[in-house]
Length: 415
Image 1 (cartoon, rainbow, N blue to C red):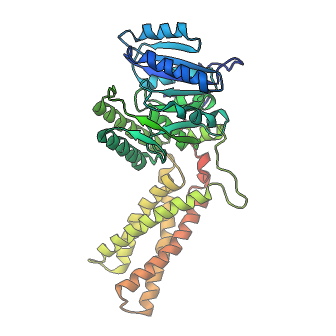
Image 2 (tube, rainbow, N blue to C red; image 1 turned 90 degrees about the horizontal axis):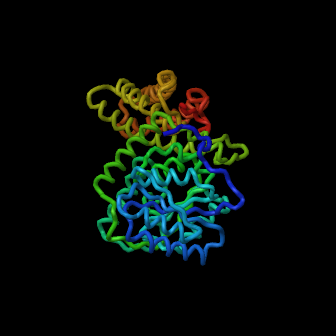
Image 3 (cartoon, rainbow, N blue to C red; image 1 turned 30 degrees about the vertical axis):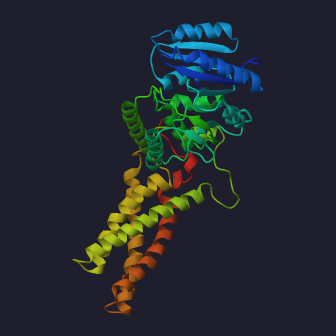
């Protein structure tokens, strides 16, 4: 994996006679299905696609006569080329061909042509116009029509939910074999994509989304191929390992996604009178604050079973303050890696002391006004004091603790 966001050194220069679209068909031992697929795709593009095109067959270390079929098709059809890779891996094949292509837009589709070709022009049109950076066909988007068994439907939706829960993915279908990318985006994004197998699609989309790139989704008509070569169990295990690897990379701040976002012009739009990133920070801070407050109240109520209100408040606030600083560090202010973590936790404890003073002061005031207040009244006073402490905490975290990183799109990433 490369952490550079500069174009790959092997990227082909753009020529005036270069095709607008390069459609890659990755294959492994597809001697039977390859020829009808390529001829059907070639016929469709020739009849309905209004730009110059190329079809590239990416032979993934096939051991049958796939290479012979590909070589013959390339000789018969002027717009067809083929490339042979000595190693297997769909991701490896796509990365190899895409980084060497001279087309403005690159796409790929599975050899079974499960996706209706009528979605091809809607897929690539936003990329040709420059409006979007990547495009994907989605079997789960509203308007799609899908024919497949319950088992594959369950796996697909389950995988989508897993990506949303672990990597906060917002795209709807990671594994549909119908995707496209602009060449300038691919030159900077693909060097960061490490996987060479089936997880390649997911990793590419997650990185693109984290970098603020625009992903266009097209609902597709899709009919399941009963002769699919995908081995579900090993593929699922590889996907899980890929998810864990990405979570670790994001946690350590090893990927220069902010740099990529800036190079491709996907930084947030400036709004007069609103500091950059403030709205998103407020939303994330509020979510962390709600979780922290609930944890604080639950812990306080538990500790009150065996001690007085002041020590219970101290211990509950201290425990949740440490967790709150760590959560805001990562989620609200987008700070990754271990650099400065101890200093920021120490500053967070000072912020905690301010919150402790506000809540303790509120309890002391309540005790002065009423010697034995009811528990609901005590909790209500603490909630109001915590709301004030939360506002102060946000300002101190933004303006002091994480001051140098308060704009998420300019967060430091370890090269």
